[in-house]
Image (spheres, rainbow, N blue to C red):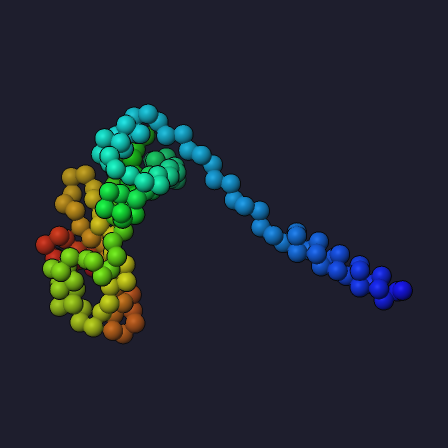
Length: 151
């Protein structure tokens, strides 16, 4: 009888500790996007899917969505509705041929692991690319649309 009571007690303790260790779901706080930010967003990006908004540490509004080309895009707006920057995630194998040629010429044997197209007002679009060199080191490169590389 003592053994069965002990087994019962241990199973209750184990079950209750397993319940206590379950993580509670993180509740995402809804961000109230000002009308001028929303208007600016909609005027620049007419076709978007799966929009989600958050407010970053500097108080800017960040929209993450799937754009018209079915690519993941993130755009940051100031509180006044001015676009600050845009980032489009690009599959490494789909990067423009002139860019991959410039990388393979300057970094022979390297492999592109990540690529993003960056757009900032007043600056020509450029690409931020991460490569894995032949010696297994990672580098981040900035590449103009013409193929000029900056480390």
